[in-house]
Image (cartoon, rainbow, N blue to C red):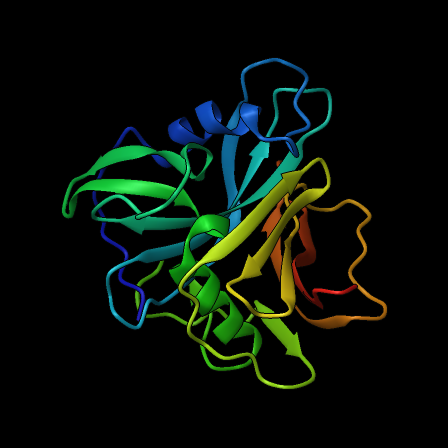
Length: 219
């Protein structure tokens, strides 16, 4: 089960994300420095206990209207082999675990493998900030034939509309919704599954959206 250490990270996650987000093609900021708050999310467990897996929602209030972004993250004790520069969010000194490499989870095969396991009902969502606590508010839906769980590599395409991940040689794509709460194509022919979860707006309003959509690659 996910263990949350009550300690410090220097620099913190929001600080690292504020420097990383503006260079993403799906970032909708107006050129001002992001002003980020943690708006929600959930975690999954790595069966090997090596990679921390968090799906974090951050809200940027630097513009006229707040925008909430989904950032899957993989926390590692050493660099991820083969990851390109854009995949690395940054490094941080963890008060318990020491130096950690924080990666955009779309580029991390362990993160993608566990997300696929969750979509298919083979893993359980965990609370973002409480140890050993399932989060039943995060729901998954899946149809069709099972997807083999081993994922040793991923192919990632970032664009203005979000991120598309192809897990290894599988004939599937995983669409990552980056800017939440906006119209998206989350249904129709070729959809195999999706993950729906919630977050909070700055005024306290609760929102829900499809964080991920799993599709046949040919669609």
